[in-house]
Each structure stands twice: as C-alpha cells, then as structure tokens.
Length: 173
Image: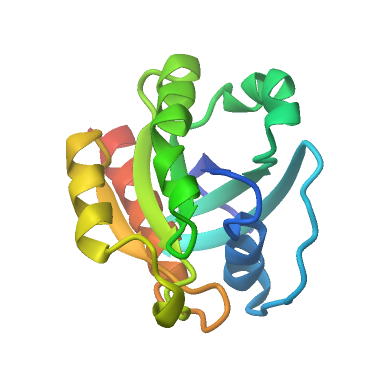
C-alpha cells in the first residue's frame, strides 16, 4: 500500500499507565486486562488517511520503568510526536509528567506532545481531575489534551489521529 509519509510517534509515561493497552486498542481494537511490562520498546504501525493524505503512524511503545531510562534516549531519534500518558487514578503518574516532557524535549526539541489521561472508565477511583490535566497541558506546551479509556475504547483513536493530523499540518507547511 502506498503512502506519502511515515510519522514516528512515541508513547511515554510511567509504567502501568496503559500505554501498551492504548496501542493494542488502536491497532487491534481489543483490550487485554492484566499487566504485561514492556521491555525496552515495542513498535506498531497503522496506515491512515488523514485529510486525504495516506500516512503510516509508526507507534513506539516505550518502557516506562526507571531502569530502562538509559536505553530510552535512542528511541527518540526521528520522532515527530509523543503521547505523554498518565493514569487518572494514580496521582504519582501525573506528578511525574514534567520528567517525561523534559526528557522528550531534551532528546527531540521539536517534538509535538499531546497529554493523555488514561483509564477514565475508572471515574470512581479518579485522583486527577480533567481540569488539572487540561491546565497542565496548556502550561507545558502540549498541543492537546484528551482523556481516554483503553478498556472501553473511548477517545483512543482520537488521541492518535489528533497527533497524526498535527504532524501532517507541520510537515506540509
């Protein structure tokens, strides 16, 4: 299948925030409960037509555990965007976002970031409000903010397609 561009997009955030589940939902349309830690990096691809242009979204699911930090820097090369992800039910994952944004901006200064609050199906366990997420995104140079549920599929495709659309606009400028 022919396409005009390949967009490398990273999924960044602490371990167990649902990065792998988001990618699995977007690529395969399914959700698997039970946590499987990503070791290093797991690549995925999906063909999309965005505003009439065929593109490949090359998604790199990056391990969030601290012990993988030294090897993570190599994955930033050539990346155009990142979904910076936190778990709305675990404030610590929200508190660590600045570290992820700093790492992304240091390794890839022109990278576009969308903030993703995942697990919004667990409303009764929420520790981070929607408003806090939105405010954080605005203050920290993110091009967007969205809450998702990998479990129900809510806003998952929208998060990836919003990033693809933003990248497409910037490369065609």
